[in-house]
Image (cartoon, rainbow, N blue to C red):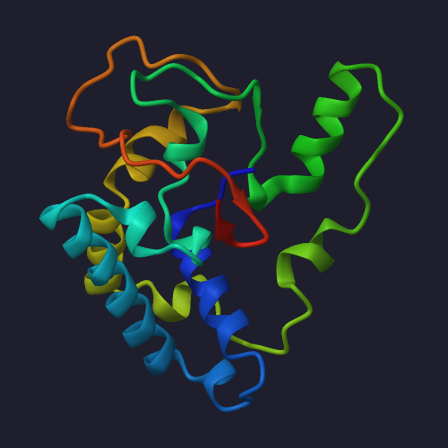
Length: 175
């Protein structure tokens, strides 16, 4: 399951601040937090690209493309679902496999039941979008092309940094 990097960071902000009613409604604080963390990821990538050792307990900050392709650009999974349309994608995958399971009420999962009025529009100013694009350039470039199934990167280019991946991410921690 992949998600837009800005939406992922906003969700992480809401999760980290779930105990603070004020922060869950403060777009300026959320914007600063997202810019700070995106900037931190971008700096680490520019300096030594060792994100998997820099964020040992924070899998949500790692580029999602690292979990879809190996260092050579070969796909490591078969199906890719979009978080933004999770119910539709999941149900479509189940139908394609002739399985009866369906995902109901995905909106509840997407909101995480957090009492917040913060939306993407509230934090998506030009500076924040640029900070997220710089930090997650490979996700921004590669994920939109993924539509249901993962394919090898035939035209794999070294401009995508797919080499410093964690071995396994369980419970939010790298193993």
